Amino acid sequence: MNTGIERISFYTSRYALDLKTLAEARGVDWDKYRLGLGQEVMAVPPPDEDIVTMGASAAKPILDELGCEGIDLLLFATESSIDQSKSAGLFVHGLLGLPSRCRVVELKQACYSATLALRMACLSVAANPRSKALVIAADVARYELRGPAEPTQGCGAVAMLVTANPAILALDEACGLHAQDVMDFWRPNYRDEAVVDGKASTRIYLHSLQQAWQHYREQTGRHLLDFSRCCYHSPFTNMACKAHKTLLKEEGIEDKDEEHIECQVGESLRYNRIIGNTYSASLYICLASLLDHASDGLDNQAVSFFSYGSGCMGEFFSGRNIEGYRQALYTAQHRDIIAHRTLLTVQQYEDIYNLTIPRDGWDYTFSQYRTGPYRLSGISGHKRRYEAVS
Ligand code: CAA
Image (cartoon, rainbow, N blue to C red; front, side, top):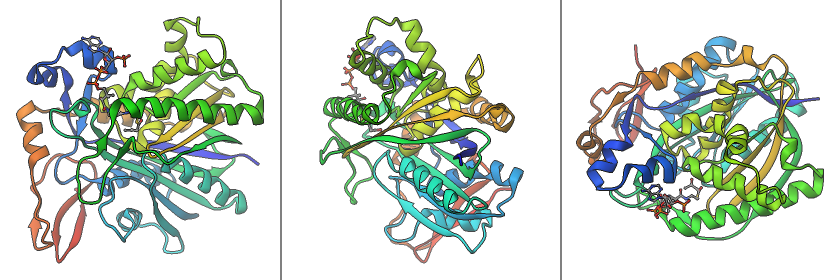
């Protein structure tokens, strides 16, 4: 029996910064961001938006269409936790009115955890094919102002409904794994910004990819050209291109030209280029981008995935697009969110970045910004208060 993705929907904030204006403000050549990193715009979360509001907003179109009957598992993947104890998934469970006979938990391993969530969701629906699982990944990528990672920030969420006999993508069982205890990127509990050894992180990402690919190949004997398209975790889009070139080299086919790389990887990077890093959601926003942009249709085509979470955990896996998958996409909604964002000035972006919210847990009300269907309205008695936006 096939298990996999029945629906996939993403959400990103209604505010964004054109990186050309950031390059000017920082005195950096715009081509470094545009061509060197492969990033053009980054999503900026307003103060009343967080992983809960973004996660619920990503899931809402799915539940509006299919309802929540049968969902007995909600897995929330994030590295931008808003509470050390309570799962962000339970806030979302409340906002979306999900059934009370449901397991809800939050998972963390940097940008990787959504992949474990997807795998666990498949196992759960395989055990009970009438059940459904909701996987949500949401993150805010935040680095120090004026640092080298600043132009790779972003925010967003993705929601995937996982079922038996899915409409969009069936996951293959084989997967290649690589785990290693390294310090390439991390965020101690007392910090809002990640600490990152940028150059080392890209080297470790590529090493992890090579190891996971080797493990996957040992099990399947498949080659890179067996896949119609390849999706990679994309902290910035050129990282995905570097990853693909690394595997082409491993396969002894590094003579493939840029046109080939664009064809196998390019469509998956369209959204990330104008959203930025979304950590745990990044790989699956790549998948949404691929599905929404694939020019020649991907019915019955094999797609590969590399999921990477610093620290580090890498997984190489694959799936097959289901015939007629296009009927199940939310392409118009995705394009609408992207097309109607408010562009910020650098000053407005820095003001939002620098806004400090009191940490004493007493009453605080958030000003209303543009958000999706849910917003964080305030904090009182150490409780976060969320509301639906009419
Ligand atoms: N025109 C065109 N290209 C230019 C250019 C110009 N004027 N100036 C520079 N470039 C190119 C450089 O040649 C370089 O290309 P290559 O990587 O192909 O050599 C690229 O632009 C970046 O330039 P630098 O290496 O000088 O950039 P930097 O050191 O200032 O910062 C970075 C790059 C280290 C990736 C930094 O953005 C960073 O720390 N990012 C966060 C960490 C990260 O994303 N790591 C990725 C792996 S870890 C992971 O994947 C988990 C996660 O999500 C964080």
